[in-house]
Amino acid sequence: MIKKILTSILVLLLAALSMTPLASAYDFMVDGLCYYRNSDGTSVTVTCERTISPSYTSLNGAITIPETVTYKGETYSVTSIGSYAFQGCSGMTSVTIPNSVTFIGYYAFWSCTGLTSVTIPNSVTSIGYYAFWDCSGLTSVTIPNSVTSISNSAFYGCSGLTSITIPNSVTSIGNYAFYNCSGLTSVTIPNSVTKIGNEAFYNCSGLTSLTIPNSVTSIGRSAFSGCTGLTSVTVGNSVTVMGKQAFDGCDGLQSVHISDLAAWCNITFDVSSSNPLVYAHHLYINNEEVTNLTIPNSVTAIGGYAFCNCHGLTSVTIPNSVTTIGYAAFAYCAGLTDIQSYPDPGQITMGNNVFLNVPTSATLHVLPQYRPAYSTADHWNVFNIVDDLTEPSGDLNGDGKVNAGDVSELYSAILRGDTDTAYDLNTDGNVNAGDVSTLYSIILGQ
Image 1: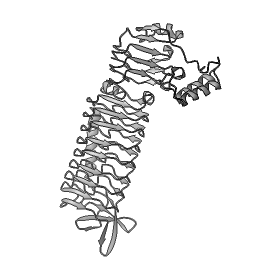
Image 2: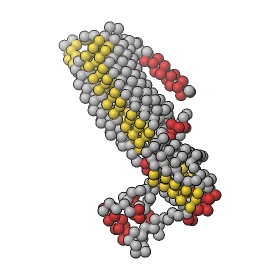
Image 3: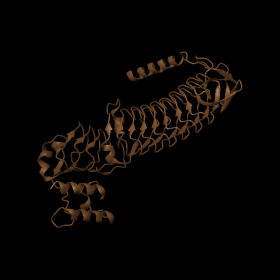
């Protein structure tokens, strides 16, 4: 609530600032549009007729900005649309921007509620903050592949937008970029994007599915919070930071497909969400498709709620690399009957309710040397504990030694596609380069 109040205050302050007089006035008017000369003396910027909203008193219908304008015998190239240029011009219905324009300024089309379509040419490289803020009538916009970033609040409150394709030139989507675009039903995020800002798609309640590509490394705070129409999300494997409440309030979200479990189990989460169950959606909560789970040896931490309520989960293998298991990670996995755990339980930091409502009849398979510790350890000692696990020896060629000969044997197994579990040294369910790394560790540790 405090955050919402502060956000509202910020919006009011920004609106108030937008009403303040601008430092510069226009130099001349041609065909109903005002311009001021740029410092180069050969180009001009489209600017406002007056410094309060609306910026033009008689601007209506379809507007075409020319590439050049002539005044008193001098011809100028139109290279930019200035800040606040068309603020509050609710009578505008469409605008055509020429190829000569490279920059659209802050608040350039702020609260142009009658604006329904905009074509931005390939010449534009930068769209300023709040450029189309509160253009609630805007239904379509074409962002050219010359634009490298979508600035903060660029399309804030454009509730009429139904779809948006972000070109593969864009590397970042700014904070609040599509905030409250409630009519947005589809969005394409290209592989070029590496960062999605705070509240970038906040309250985009019309979105039903979402694919976040492998290029994205950071998803900001509340980035998709309030997207109540979301039912499925596919997230790439490069995300290393997830802001708090990223999917808060997405109560319709049924499943999240994670491309790379190892990457996601090691992700940095801020779990201070007002709705803890939403945090679970970051991984596999409610996912009925997860049945047999082998966590890769590259994983060191299993996040809170990671597999909460996965009713289809029957078995899980936890490698000895895991040192942290978060709050309610396997809670309500009512079908979980078989757990294989390789770590020393004394070396694992456990959250509360890790196995809440998991049947105590489940069999817990452990290494013989750790059975006494599991028998007395909280969370673990409720299960039927058996010491039938063995650590991978690394002696793959059967010569009684672990050395370069075993490395050669492992490489041969990988090349021939051998899936024998004897070669699966990191117990991740695959025979691949990860097992080579594990074998080298065994050799070096002798």
